[in-house]
Image (tube, rainbow, N blue to C red; front, side, top):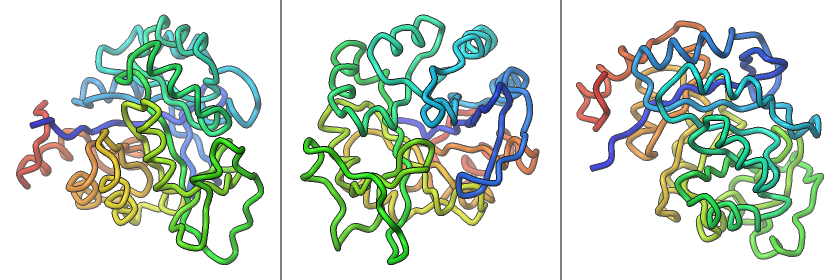
Length: 271
């Protein structure tokens, strides 16, 4: 049986790890190199590095920092932010990353998922999906292109997909988009609830269940962890839990989390 994973997430802006609430109110959380080394030593299964303003600023990812982190750790390492072509993916993998995460570029050019999966293998390609539950107050400011018309939002949509670091509502149904990404060759899905992000009120388990019901590839739960029980609840559904605030601000440690989960019969790799 495949073991569940605990994955610290380093959201990086201007060379520093940051953390916000609902994708805003960003505060400093530390040095990425120091945190990466700390989490590996504590027993993290993988690490995710996201340059959160690369897409919105229309610039390339901070490659020197990627290289520095890759030199310091030996656990699987995923890099995302502003990655929009096969050549950049190749460069990031050459710098030492094991996987890449694509988000905004995949929405604007879904063929990139397929091209990348065929070129590097699905195991290297994580599609990040930033989602927000639909309400009457939401205004969709971006329209899906013709390639995505079949999965656009409608009256039965429970959550929309957002791009550019949560800035633009793309009018795409989150569940259908997850299924589409799998069909295009994605190896994993990193699903972040914008509603839950940074609140520490728990992951959006209901949406995770709906996505898991419709795809066969691994799903990483992101956004909302505030307690060990929240992590357990997510891992009863998803394949991995992404953690930020709880770890960055020393509210919990990875050994504490893993001990608790193993004592509650979850299949977790020991430290």
